[in-house]
Image 1 (cartoon, one colour):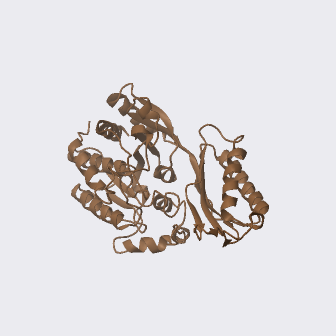
Image 2 (tube, rainbow, N blue to C red):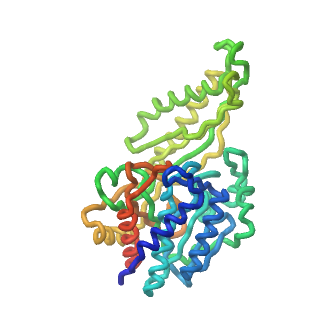
Image 3 (cartoon, rainbow, N blue to C red):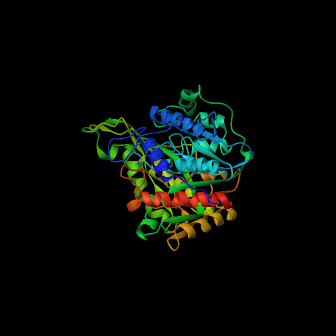
Length: 399
């Protein structure tokens, strides 16, 4: 059978979700995990799930499920955003899942459940909501994670305590398919509509702190300074050089967040706290990179005379997609976008990585215009969004 999706209903819901936390700049959104906008969006999603004939349920960390009766295939993604986020990152996969579940129920098709995971964007960790649900990290360990303002995960999720219930039993799901924008330039530059994911890279992420000596910027001689920012600057230069012989062209690493204390123009920085993240498809290489990063940081701290502290190492292993679910997506892609699809790896991290601990998983991508994501100008042509939706609907019938 074929599930007839309602593209207008799908697009209307997608734009309505964008209104929660709309930035006022293009189509951008500001909807970080546990923010007022995030919680309001989840409440709205719960109502839409109920209207679609699904049982809405929040688990203890705010993951929102729309459950079909009995065993089902699980579809979805996340609906939280980066601090300056795009309107499609995660949200596209959630609303597409809702439309397929709704359309399948209307047509007497296979049962489909829907999920919107919480804190995929990593306010507190790495894909925190799905990590806790899949037991990648215990709830107790997650609760002590902090964001950059010092708020703990436990404190943040407490604002949803009146909505939550027990964790959902994953045994009721036969598999999980996550649809997402590519967040890179490959499909867009090749004028292709669909990417079927072969595997998701692994990731490592930790905070590093250099602690020096805060002092007067005008009277402290350069040779007597223990400048924490100079340590960070030296580390950044050194790590690029030292990783060169270890990595491949697809390996990436990023210092994405920096906090200086006291962050004043006339004070030598006494503390620099920064994020260090690296990604690769090979777990052994990720381990080698970790050793180089730690060794380099130690050498810099000793050379400049600052102390060094490593935060907890968070990460996920590389994951291959399930061949059966992947084949169902490939068949759908050939029907919907014949000659305009490819098999490709995912360089971005997704909830599917965690869910793979519980059940078979697969993913598909649609193009990101200009390869832009995690930005207010993130976008995808509506014709490509609908093409992805149709591939997903076809795959559900044959999965």
